Amino acid sequence: MHTMHRKRMMLVTLPPLVISLLLFIIFFNVQVIRSPLIPSSKTIILQTQFSLLIGILTRVDNYNHRHFLRLIYGIQSSPIAKIDVKFVFCNLTKPEQRILISLEILRFNDIIILNCTENMNNGKTYTYFSSLPHVLPHKYDYVMKADDDVFIRLEPLALSLKPLPRVDLYYGFVIPCASMNPFVEYMSGMGFLLSWDLVEWIGESDIPREEMFGPEDKMVGKWLKMGRKAKNRFSNKPAMYDYPGTNGKCSHELIPETVAVHRLKRWDRWSHVLEFFNVTKQVL
Image (cartoon, rainbow, N blue to C red):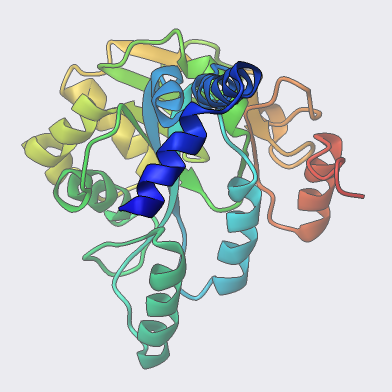
């Protein structure tokens, strides 16, 4: 008690100048903590305008390529969108896959395993979209299906989505290649996007369920046409395209406005694309 009393007496008897200095320091520290120059979690949430899930359809055994794509998308972000990238494949079939995939899930938590036999055009895309409302912990504004040989630039993608509707939207690279009309046929499987209401419709409607088999991107366009869905459509040409010289009129030279480049099936193509967009310019 005597010690506490002495401490109080010392504080009271401090010179006014010292007390003023202490109060200034306390006030300054509080102001720094509250300063708008230091972003808070609330600020980040307010800046985010929509959410997007990108599901990259791949195969279980593509371990090295999956790790490479984690690097590609792990260094990208957008201030206006919450973007999650996940890898999607069908049921595991080998004992070693259970160990290796379990390690990936524990480390990265970015894998969706569908209840299907691995395929391209025999219902995998249908299973992907129809399963999402049941397996995801929350819904997204948009869901994208992408190939694993496409480079997607997340910030330009988000900026292109910013002014578009959040419902009944079908977005991508319209086929045929020469067309600029998004209502003509369907969006290329390189990477097309649906608003969440269309994802839910795919899971609920009998139309997709009875029309699962065939070229997966073409089938999605057929479902939407039969269901009279996707009244809002956007074909992002020329910002989405196939790698130069790989696919006729679907290809053109790399351009700064690029959102997605497809058909990167060789490392020299990946290297060319990453160099063109200066992805590693700040490192070496």
